[in-house]
Structures are given as C-alpha cells and as structure tokens.
Image 1 (cartoon, rainbow, N blue to C red):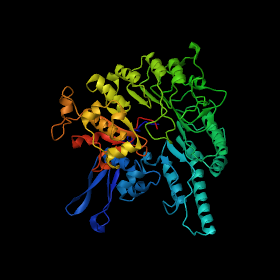
Image 2: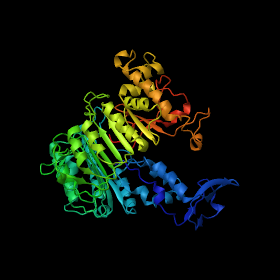
Image 3: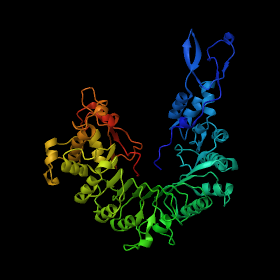
Image 4: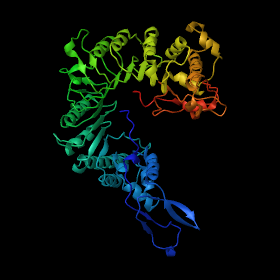
Length: 563
C-alpha cells in the first residue's frame, strides 16, 4: 500500500553501552579498549595524532544507518559492510532488530555461499519481534552460450538447493510465530510444492497483519488455482489481518472483518459473492482500491435500481479508488456508499494502460458519477480524475471543492480551463499536483526528443481548436504546461506572506512551496518520482523563468496515486 513507514530510528531505544576500540593502525601499547557506560554511541575523530571516540547521539547514528539501509534489499550489501567497519558500528547494526526484520532470498551469485548467508539472515532475524518475509520463485538467469548440459544442470540444482534452504527457514515455527508481513511474488510449481511440504493448514499466524500476493504475468491457470487455495487458506485461518493486496485470481469472499486496507488488482469474486456482500462486514476498512476491474469480475455494482437495503456503511473509509471507472454502475455504488470520513477519491477512466499511448481514445463522460458524489457531504482533500474529457461537468465540480483540495491529479487542459474561469490559482490549499503526460510529451519536456516549431505563450492562451496548431500537439501541451507551472511554482502578489518570503530565490522570485509531478505512460519507471532537473538536457522544452523552481518539479508517479 502507499503508507510511508515511520523512520526506523524513531522506534529504537538507546544501546545499553558502547565499546571504543583502537583503530587498525594503532599500536598495542596504546592501552586496552575502553568500555563507556553510556546511552550515547561514539563517533570517531582525530585528537593528538590518534583516533579517539567522542559522543554522538544514538538517534543520529541510527538515522544514518536507516537511510543507508532503506534500499539495501534484497542484496543487503550495505548492511554487511556496516557490520565490518568497526566494533561500534557492528554492535549498532546487529543488535537493532529493525535492520534485520525484512527477509528475502538474495539474488543468485550475489554472495559466495548463499545457503550460509540465508541461515545467517534468519539467525539474526530471531532478535526481531515482528518479521517481514518475501516468498517468490527466482527468474531463471541465462547461462553463457556453449555451456555444457552438465554445467547447466549443476547450476539449476545449486539454485534449487538455495531456494529450499530459504523456504525451510522462512516457514519454520520460529519465523511463523513472528510473521507480521507476508509477501508472495511470482510462483512456480516447485515453489508451491515446497510451501505445501513445510506448511500444513489450518495454521494460525498469530501476528500476521499484512499479506501481499502478486503471482506474475506468466502464471498458468493451474498455478493460479493452487495459489488461490494457498491464499484462501492463509486468510481464513487468521483473525487479525489488517492489510490485503492481491493480484490476478479468483477468490471467494473470505476477508476478515478486521481489515483496514484492501487493494485488489485484476481480481474476480466467485459467483456466490458480489461487491456489496464483500464490503458490508468490513466496518473497519479505511482504504479500498479496486484496479483493472473487468465487467464480470464481481467488483462492479450488479444493478441500476438498488434499494435502500443495499446501503453499504463503511464508517472509517477515507480513501477510495475505482479504476477503470464505469459511469453507470459506479454511480449506483457511490450512491449506496455511506462513508462520512472519505477524504481521497481516485477515478480513472483510462483502460488498457499497458497497451495504449496516452492520451487515451476510449474516454467517456462521468455525468452520473459526479451526480452521485454530489449527493454526499465529503470533505475531499485528494482527488484524481484521469481519462475524463467532459470538462464542462468536471470544472464546476472541482471549483466547488477547490478550497479544501491539497493533492490533485488532472490533465493540463482541465487545469487550464479552471485557471481561465477563475483568473487566479484556483486551489489555495494545494500542496501537490500531478499532470499525466504521454511518453512523447515526457521526452519533449526533458529534451530527449528533437524540438519542433516554436510556439509562444500568447498562442497557448488563445488556441481553442487543435486544427489551428502548427506545432505537434505534444509540443503545444508542453508549452501550455510551462505557462501553468509558472503560476503553480511562483507566488502571486496576493499569496506572498512572511512564510512564503522564506522560500524566495536568489533573484527575489518567491516560491509557492507546491510540488508538481509529470506522470503518465512515459514515467511509470520512476516510482518513487525523481527530480526533473538532473534528467533534462539543454534541449528541454519545459522552460521555467527561475532555475530554483525546477527543484519542485518531479518526473514520475507521486506516492499517493495507484498505478
């Protein structure tokens, strides 16, 4: 899910004591190592020609390590290096459980002895009260051309033994008793056989709170069926599950009433269930995300004239995403929904995301959906409308809620229409905005595509019909985007206050503090998003008047959207 974990060091207490060892180049007669009974670790400095340790706050040292280890999985190279710098660092890293709580099989040949390192990982993980374990098949790596059959079979056998050792460690009783998060990646017949060998059902995982399953696009119908039975057995045997994220198979309605977050992608409910029967028991549900829905999936409203008896009360729901959108059936669903705490709404009418260039051709109006939303008193702070072309309906809907919107994802054209209606920046509380672009538009914005005919800001403001545009449409959209960004990233005279003046650039231009994301088909590889400036070239078509404004422009999907 999209939650951002708390920093590791916020959950860590101080180490009971630290030991200061001489450095490797110090002489033996310089004295024994000193044991310092302190809650503070030590840092190294140079005084009087020898290295000594001075006090450094525990939180600072741990925050540095937490930052260094954030992207260390699955190789864990940095984690191992930190344990070999000095005794101080080794003690800090090894004895803090959060640095060892996430377990996954290391990539093939990433270490000399993968079986030994796997055992070491599980041994160190036993200091952790909760564990996050990933179980997945390895993608078969290619061998050099001309490799003999015996050599290939030896590699296959070696990798199988390594996988067996990992699964045995991941599913033993000590690990199962600490499992808090369980992740399944691509599955194979041999992997499922191993799981069934080491795991008998019903098995209660007393601490399991979250389960994630993404079997991979290559899974056959046979593997999908076996995986469905596995996940069903796990879910039905748990009484405290809070987060479920599942992909690409059919499952009966087995979700426990304790669920807080549910994300289903390309899923189907069996014939005995529907969207209403699935949701009605989930009174603690806070986040509901339905992606890649098919008409016969069971995850769409089943009729257009439902009675008041079909009301769905979700009193804790604050985030709802319906992708792709069905204007008729989803309008009925939204009418029946009772969720007074809803704050984030994501509606996307783009279909076949993997196979079509943006902008999409199969857009449709959402008149019924907007009318259904208007029946509720929702204080929406986060809105995503994508693939929706009916601007005459969409713009008044957004303006009605403009004062409370903090995060927004809409097209450049929709924002320009809103800007033209208000003559000022229409969203005073806006903190982040995302603009979906096509791959060609992303390349032009970054200067990775050859620049075509010039177009002026005045032409951008006056053009009403695409037939009047001499430059390519993508070039026109990038210039229009640049015009809008100058207002979004800079503060108007009425917006500048003491707080904003603190964000002034060297040339006196005040920054608004807002963040802009350029997302879409050409940026799906950037998640999390990356800054615009390091990616662009001197041919970049997206030009801003102040260099520092680029610091607030990112390429890629923001963390609060679903792709």
